[in-house]
Image (cartoon, rainbow, N blue to C red; front, side, top):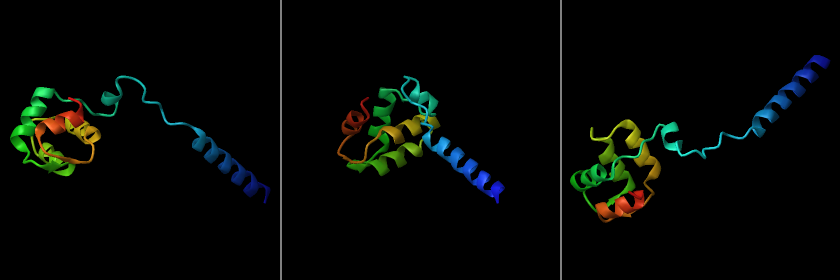
Length: 101
């Protein structure tokens, strides 16, 4: 009976320790590269948005157009997904503004 009580207490303590451990802070400027995302070049992005997206377009449609092209690397596609806010975009320049490119 004592063994079960000790195991229960030990298990609770280890769970409590895990719950109190904060996730690593992403305060470094290399956060994007650490997450596997890479910011694409503004000129290539604008050209792609002008040629491959039919406007008006929402976030889902824009991401689908980016996903289907070999112009961007997987890391750049991940950056788009992480940085493009939900919304409806009337033009490529509206998307560029939302992406802050």
